[in-house]
Length: 114
Image (cartoon, rainbow, N blue to C red; front, side, top):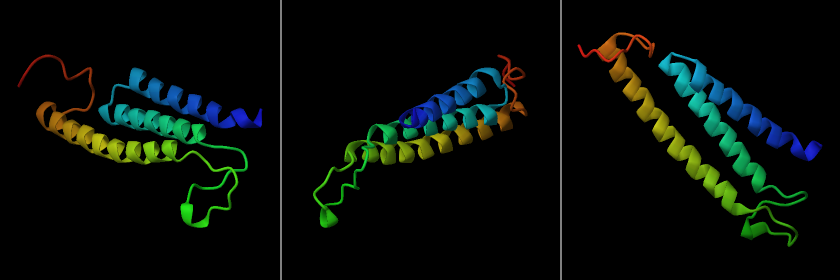
C-alpha cells in the first residue's frame, strides 16, 4: 500500500486540476488548474522512474548497484521548462483578454466584439 501513495497523489492532483478547469469560470483559476494537472503529470513521470534502493544515475560516483531510470527525470525537466513557457503564454493571453473585455469571467466574454 505504501508504494501506491505517489500514484494516489497523482490521481488527486489531476482530479483537482480537472475540477478547476471544468467548474471555474475565472481564467486565472483555470490556468491554476492547468498547472496543477501539469504537476500531477510531472509527479507521475518521476514516480515511473523510481526504483526501490536505487541511486542517482551519475556516472562519476556510481557504486555499481541498481540505478534509477534517467529518462523520466529528463522528461520531467523538459516538461517543467515547456510548462513555464506555456503558462507565460496563457497569462499573456489572459492579460490581452482582460484589456479587451474588461473581465476575467468567461461567461461575460460573450461573442460580441467591442
